[in-house]
Length: 201
Ligand SMILES: [Zn+2]
Image (tube, rainbow, N blue to C red; front, top):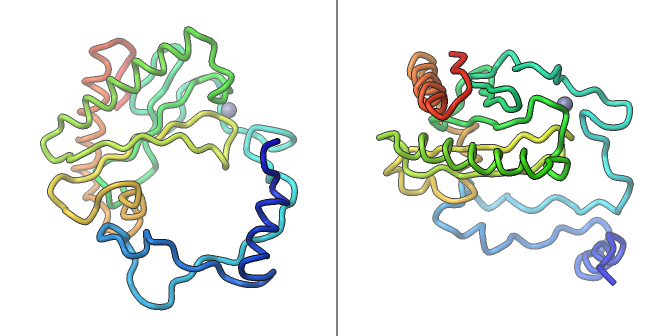
């Protein structure tokens, strides 16, 4: 029988009590851990409750309309690539999303196949840009029930902005100048459109 949230929580309480803090993980000592100092500690683990509602399920609306969103940089009849409203500290962070209100497990085989192709194309285009060291791909989805896979590019040769913590640096580093960011988005959209669909920027 898979372990329940109550059993996980009971194990936490057995180690540190109801209000206790678990110890810092080994990750805190990694060279690529973005934070330093002696005051860091994990938050107190809260007892299990209901799953928090996400945008696009129950009575919470999703902003999707079936058409490309305001921030879309590329779209075809079924998919769009969205950029945030402003640049962050990493060179590029974009989302691949279906136009229809679908989550990952809702994709039929044709949509799943197209998701795979678009993901590889998008990854290849961004990772071949001369300033990019790596592209990280994430699908999380605790905030919205509308699939929004992340493609997160980090700058090459910045040697402690690596691995999964690279994502945190998007909010730490000074923002990329907007003209450079917009030119990079247009480059990605133009190259993705060579596989079909339309560049929107
Ligand atoms: Zn939606």
